[in-house]
Image 1: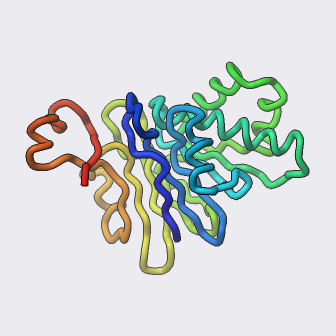
Image 2: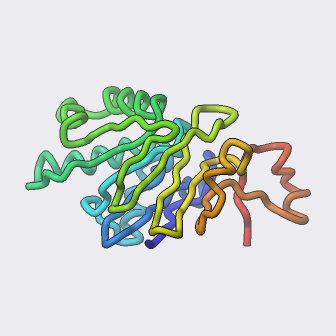
Amino acid sequence: MKITILGTGHGTAINCYNTCYTLENNNEYFLVDAGGGNGILKQLSNVNIEIEKIKAMFISHTHTDHIMGAVWIIRLVGRKYLVEDYNIPFYIYGNNEVIKAIKQMCEAVLPSKFNELIGNQIKLNEVDTNSEVEIIGKKVLFFDINARKVKQTGFSMFLNKEDKFTFIGDEVCNENTEKYVKDSKWLFADAYMAGEEAETYNTIKRHAHSAVKF
């Protein structure tokens, strides 16, 4: 399993792209969140990830810096269906609020020929706690993280019989997600600044999440 970080920035970051990443297995990719715009296309190009190698996309919640790039992914994937000999289904996962938002955004900004692909070649899948699917050959278990602002979904991907990767989104581990985090080999989650930076930026009081500087 290979993890590629595409962005680490918050919603109004201008010097780096918004938080998103890919998981790769046998040259097939799972895109987790899509950032805030068409910068996702540049980020994928920078790391040489071709769109046809992305087999599925998951959007954790409806905040702009996580979901807006999904429209550009759908547009790029849709173009392959429309102008190339491409017929492999593309799967999108998200909770009910995410799926509703993606439909509304696509209907508002994409030509009808792209929207006609949704539900056919481009498959939208609502997930919630205990929803289980296979993505890039690995079992994935979704769960609601009980976020404070909007409905937000995390997941565990089982890499083998012993190891799992867990993503709990924009919030720290709590009593609702502890059982999913337990025994994870990899954990992607909120990270707080420490020391002088914590005092300068006062992250715990000002924000639900922030980024660590190494």
